[in-house]
Length: 222
Image 1 (cartoon, rainbow, N blue to C red):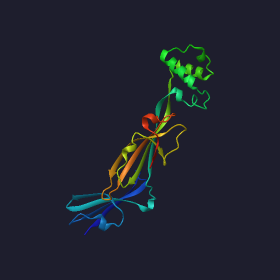
Image 2 (cartoon, helix red, strand yellow):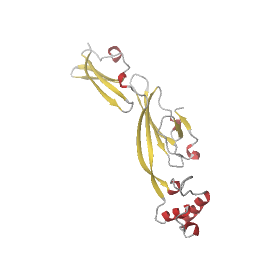
Image 3 (cartoon, helix red, strand yellow):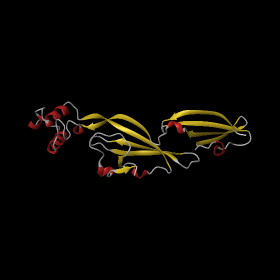
Image 4 (cartoon, one colour):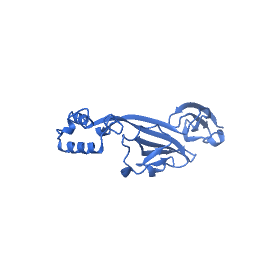
């Protein structure tokens, strides 16, 4: 006859719920979760120990208010070209025109910042030149890596990996920034036939991910 020998509860950040781990044992055969527990079980393991047949499994505590969507975010710094800084962008205090950007490109190629266009540091070109002459041609800005974990009936669709995506469930990014799917991982949930899928997304810099390289934005989830 199967008896329960232990139970413990712990919060699982991946699914945003309280998970109960149960262990049962029997002298004659491995306890079957389907006959000893009416709840939906997963991550079932069977092993023989100390002359007894033991079965462990997990269940989501229904009172924990579990959420099938779990988010894990990470903010890090990344290097971006100085021309993309908000002060030089459209609407910035020193907005650079297309003609200004062409002059900057030429000056960077030749190393010659001596023209009159660059002499006044109060103008957009002058300010940029003064920074460039100090060796400042880039800046650091925060970027976001976002992992979204959900339980689904199939393995993840990998067709969007490396593509720009519009996320339904995600933090709002600054104007001009876009999301790109960086990758996905998955694990089978024992006996249930479902998969725990984790999708990784990365935020772009101020100009957004290049649509020529990464494609037009696709909706995720579809």
